[in-house]
Amino acid sequence: MTESEGTWPLWEVFVRSSRGLSHVHAGSLHAPDAEMALKNARDLYTRRNEGVSLWVVASSDIIASDPDAKGMYFESPQGKDYRHATYYTKSEGVKHL
Amino acid sequence: MSAHNIDHSLDSFGDSTASATRVTPGNALRPEDIAIAQEKPSEQVAEYALRLGDDALILAQRLSHWISRGPEIEEDIALGNIALDQLGHARSFLSYAAKAWDKTEDDLAYWREEEDFRSLHIVEQPNGDFGVTIVRQLIISIYQHLLYTALLDSGDATIAAISAKAVKEVDYHRDHAIAWTLRLGIGTEESARRMRHALDILWPYVGEMFEDEELHAALGDVAVAPSSLRAAWEEEFTAVLHDAELAVPTVPFAMARGRRGEHSEHLGFILAEMQVLARKHPGATW
Image (cartoon, rainbow over the protein chains, first blue to last red):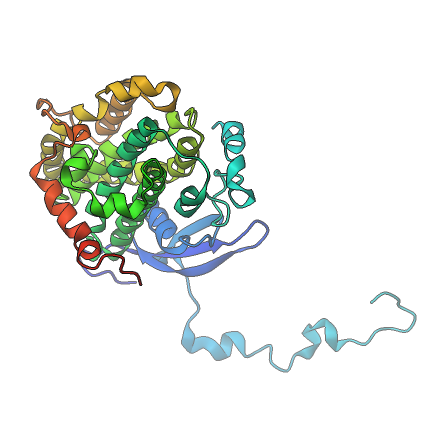
């Protein structure tokens, strides 16, 4: 990530909408440091009762997969139906499946 | 927090507002609920609510001027949110006060003259640069947090209920102001210089915040005597400045009588902008 001179770094915001659910990526924002990022996240992403918990992560700390490596990363499972439970037929006599 | 006190006090507001301490939109006490409730404040209680409401209203009007002018869009929204919180508190207090005179919140906000406003001088001070706004926020948010906390035990059920909603929002305003005071105080030589300047120009208006009036004594446990907040305010404010490597100003307090309707030259301009639309097109809605 490159930051032009004089702008605040970018942060990714994750909001948990209610107890028991996972934090979900909601968007990003600029802030001078982690604490201010959390405050800004509160103002930007929880104005309408959206959440009960917030995470912020410096965007530069996220290691992302390479979009150009999509084939190598994500196409391999195609055709490998045996990785899904539905591929298998129920053995005779097994109940409650 | 005296939740029991508040719950009991809200019996007359019906189920939708049974607990003012719940933050979900359907349960929080709204100005509309106050306007239709049976309770009518006495003239003295209304005068007190007017003071609380006018402080919040003028501060809201000042803060909202930051919208589209913030140093970054995130901070623009933060100040806009704080302005809206204050506007919400103003609407609740003014809706309640208005009932004593068979009026509405709009009558009080748009159709009173400058000398009828009971706000403190500190809230009408110009925004200045970001540092001035942050120092003004620090001064007023610590004050409002102490005040609304004390008003949770107010003998007036509606004032206690409005304070229960407001105290949580003001807690955040305080948090926001402290965070920025630390960053600007310790930040750069330029940011520290601007903070020292902001403290010097705003400090004169601190004295007025703690002046008791006859009204406070007359209202007994309904009101909080401003002087009773002073020690706690000074302790907290001084601690924040200490952490931010800033000194408490030594400039003297100004003679300010906002509570008697005597205002600085700024309020007239604020009201002109705030009231022009309602006065030019009475009853206009959208």
